Length: 377
Image 1 (cartoon, rainbow, N blue to C red):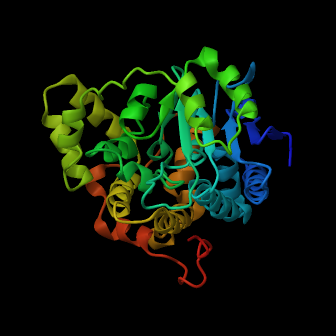
Image 2: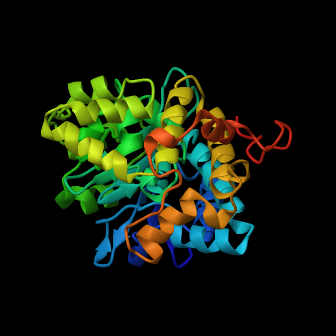
């Protein structure tokens, strides 16, 4: 199962995965998604393997970066050339996200360094033990180097890979704040928001990783003892400006959120408003609707909805636009292709976005029987 960009090995009772594309911050390709899926399915059905651990690497070696998301350069080129692998990527990535979320064996994600976009989809989404009987233990580990975000509105997309599910379950209205702004959070903030389970010191990562191979997972306390040995006992700090986030991001519309921030006198509100003004106005409206719809959805339902949404994001026919005229292609162009950081959003202003532009993003182009993610539980 080992490829250049995905390294796998089995030691003891554990299957170990290393994302090995450091020159691209381990951004996911279609080949990587397929390799990860094949590997997890094989290990799921192998009684000799009782747990899975996953990490990234940087140019200096293991750890240092987890995953920066999907390969947006591929997205851009595939959209412009009509490459059908673009659709395959999202279908198979979302199916992988669901597989990880429902994995029946312990799944341990070492979320060191950059953890953004599609990287969040590799971390299990959190699990409600009572609502998810039969699912294995999930441990999402962060470090003092963790930089976590869902920055998709910056490239004219919405937070996907099941982000509707996990962001909508963040406390208060912090999910809306993360989805719209793409704010980067640290380890302590991730724990406080329910997006991480434990914090390890960077200096302990290699030892913790290697010691997993010595555990007897048939013993009920082995993993718990391992976690106690390496996890920091320091309580996560509260999120700065939490009350303000809950206040402003509780408004019904993006226009109300931004306008209320702009009339406030404090620096945080002004900076947040300025950030939102830089994002795609259309995708801000879509992301807000996504988070609020997803609060009542299962992960499978949310992923099917996001698959519908990403189809319209790259094929906005209801707006009378081609793929090359989509917000997503334009956003990627500005950030990663031409790198002028001057996207030409359409509409240009938040106040110009209409309900008629937003609503079709949530209509499925497939019937329930033909949906590419119909098999999700």
